[in-house]
Length: 75
Image (cartoon, rainbow, N blue to C red; front, top):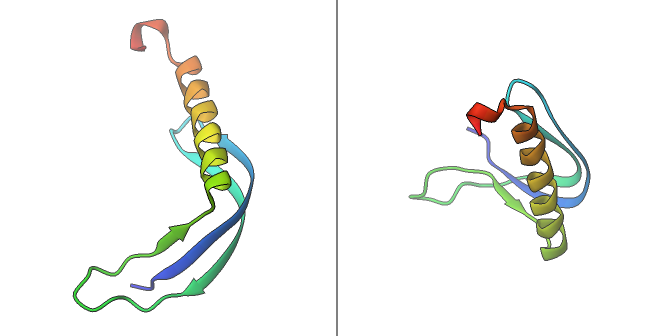
């Protein structure tokens, strides 16, 4: 498995589909990362506090859109 260091520079847009997926358009720096011995290999996503706040706002908006499409009986 390849592991990467992913640094989010800027969130540009978010959208969701009727299939339950959320997509984000981002500017990011991506570089290969060596796995740490003894720890399961995984990629690492980093972002600034400002970008984390943008991500939170985008997620809230996208989740509200999902909820808006559900029938009242499913809420």
